[in-house]
Image (cartoon, rainbow, N blue to C red; front, top):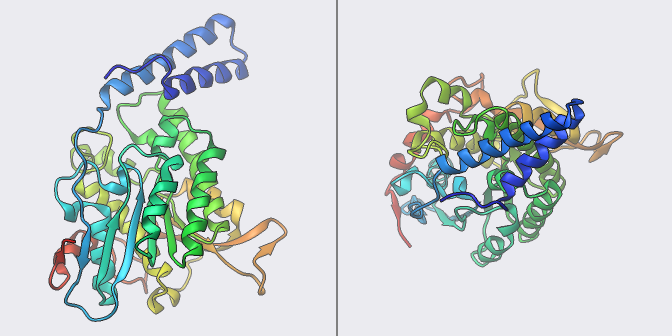
Length: 355
């Protein structure tokens, strides 16, 4: 489908080109050329990146149904990355991998509900939360932000809707883990200089998301360019057929980054006992958010110093480097690497039952 002249991403590209060119002291002709380059690249990216044609498979059901204990109710909210668009089997979706992993690690059944919608922005989280609250979730996982960048939703608007979602879920007693906006600069159909702008927009949104979510009582994990280095080494394995959404292996990378934070949010003793590495620890929330946006796989959560939530620079936050989990766990870390995450669904006794 050809992009419309009023496409928000195209409008954003034109605006960014003009601002960048003027800031650099370029002439009016150069400004027009710069705007034209970005406009053309945005149109080309829209043509290369196809529209969603079919919904992703659903992984809803009970994981570990033969295990004892009250089921943990897990809901997955957000956009196509949360829904698992680009894979063909339910067990390959991020929600299914995480539900299977939690069931296996905690030896309890997990009931999974997916409310994520392909193409959703943060503005659409309200309806998803309303549906999620009806099942009384214990844990909510939110992956959102990519469409906010491509549709040039103002950061303040995106964050406002995300914060409302986190607050409503927390008020209902659910723990909330948010995978922040991925770095769209890793998407190959997006060429420089538009790639550089989308990288800046992505990191800007991820930083704002981290600060807002932690203030609202949630946990964040920066996804950033998590797939970037691996994509360069093996582009056919980690991205799906459209070269925009992750493949099953790509989602496994994201799931393995989220998994230890999901366990920590659920309060496992093993996670609480872990010793922080020298480059981890307590920061002011603004500093932690900026560091997390630059380092994929970084967890940020609320913290206290001397019994206080806040210091001179604002809210205190704890920063953990979860990128070390990808095949290179630190001493004392439980075995939750990407290879384990890929095998989780098959290892849960009894598999899962559909609702």
